[in-house]
Length: 492
Image 1 (cartoon, helix red, strand yellow):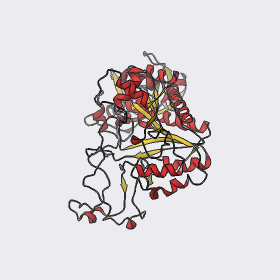
Image 2 (spheres, one colour):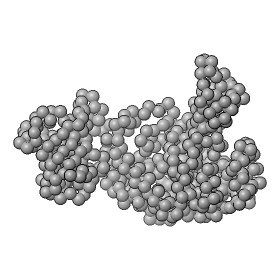
Image 3 (cartoon, helix red, strand yellow):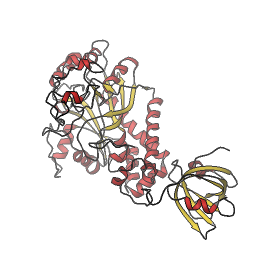
Image 4 (cartoon, one colour):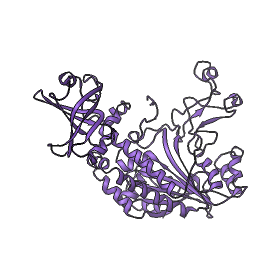
């Protein structure tokens, strides 16, 4: 006998069907000592299936029922019958019950409902069993499937870029260092000297850049003795390596974990997160924006179709405007305007911002949300940002002040996509690297792409967890990844 998941039983099972179902007990109710009702969930859907346990049918009924509590794992063989209860089409009449694992009601942390998300983050090994995090896991799965489907249907090649790299794509220095050098020997087992090697920033400087638990200096470290023979770290982006393949095989996308040693404890930042990064050859900024808009609208629509019950739960329990907001995104074209036009709107809005805006400053989340939630009331794509606040690889405009960058902004989240047309001109790229304080020799291979058959190309990056925030209405990004990595937090 095959063992279907509860999701398929609730949807398709008909009375009279023999069934073998297994899962975890959400609740137990006993009736007059002869009957018990178990609500069983196996994680395949939001709903539970009711198991009717009859003392006259199930062997060792009284012994079993005493041991079965919330959180216990059981297997049930029986028959699908029409349910007499409200709100459920079918239930299972148990013929036999197997207890796989007990859950002590005195110590099981999820014995009661209504735990805060803060509490559940400390129980990351158990929180997937809750309604909220089971739903998040299913939505995340559907979202990942939609992402791969979108690109595969459009002929993109899936490329795996390295996790360990010697290049800093963003040039911000917020990299987790990878080394086999013995830090204890470098520091003498005491407070490390200035010449010691650090692996992670610990606190931000006044400029906003991380300076580390002690000021790192590389002069005293012989990286030729390290595993890779040079300084290496965890990737902040797969873009640069993605460009290699885009400039050889055409349209590609990467989809994997990225890491940033940014000492931030906001609801929008993680130290480890997943990024989707397409790169397209023979593509300009207009093509880039068109793909990004189509991408966002398509994957949201796909998840809405795949996970209606889960999203209805989030709409009821987390964010009451969620479904209306998502429908607004998928059914309307995105507004497009330049950074300069956006700053003008913000300056003339009469709104008091925590961070005053003026031309040349980077937009903060409050500015992005004002544009999408109050002014336009729909997603916005901003283009042509000041070159001084953007990365070296973005194509310079002829005005000498701006670059061919674009950001997709959405309500409640702000920036969800950052992208640009890439600088394909060798001499201009060298100048930009120097302007940004980078040594062109460290990026010799990246520059050679501009020497041998250079082409216009563009791409963008979408943060998976921010997209999950958008789709689920969750407030804190730490609840959108199975095991959040944040400053001072890497328990699981």
